[in-house]
Image (cartoon, rainbow, N blue to C red; front, side, top):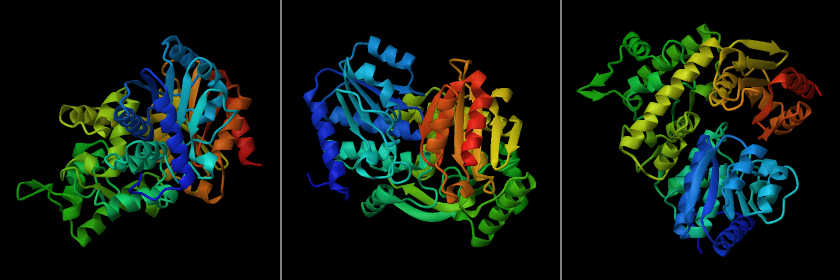
Length: 463
């Protein structure tokens, strides 16, 4: 099959073997996908792949793998289990599933542990491709989709997932760059450099300012009154000739004034400002109407993540597959809820600074475990002079467990730190488990082992 994108031969061959394994099996597939934007994009692509192969599936989101969750899956009695955007980092936990069912894992996290029997895996790391930067979980699942169908209908989700996993920071690289090149060549996407605001350059500017959380604009993010006051201060009308004023409508002078005011507000609140956090490529999905939040890929990823983090992952999957109307309204409601939680967390979470490590004590201020990752990412981008930002929150399902999110700052990335190994080792020393990518990782640890984990992480940073 001639694919519309140039992919490494060993990667397409590996994907073809996974397709063969799917075709050989019988019965419905139990599909598990992660709850973030990359996981939801992966889940949507996997569902469409299975549908095109004539297979039914029972799909569910999952926050993390554990023995209890694996036991619950086994009790359902499916003969085939498929995981996307999770699984490779927990191979040692998967043996129980693979002894009772055919197990297929499509993931981009670095593999850890020995592969069990009756196990088929598609993972770029196994082929010398850096899954932490060069391809996302959605991109890896898109390779499977292309091998199974040859269709380009969902390949933009490879980039939605990559943006959700921050793989666009510093520009797309590797296979992500190839996905971008292909989608631009096929007139699926357009790219331009713009101020980073929710909705992109063609979204109503008043709503863009109010709904932008990354970067977090003090007094504006999450506040319609604050957004309106900002526009009034700059002499920018919210509407022009009865239509919403958009970022793309501004003159160069207005755009510079807006950027200057955003920087001034961030600096006055003690945030550090880096150019890449405020200005960068905007990717426009040309199939979406002007004014839709899904027309901008970054906002698309934000919406999917909000759906997953507020218990509405199935809504995100439906959006990724093309549903609109009332489901888009539900996704916007999820975003409003998510935005309020993040704004509250940014305003109320106590912090401790230990050397070049910043700790967000979300377990003390009641930050939900589904929000702590986003808060940690936002803070990390506003503290480039530090190395690492770590957020801690209590697991909503089990208060005896803490969720840990760790992010490298710009300085941490330049220093070449590897959070995947640092967090994994610290979590294991504290009786938990963790891992992820070089610049973003997470862990689940016993609540009583919080200080033990942090001490081990600090010790690892000082090596």
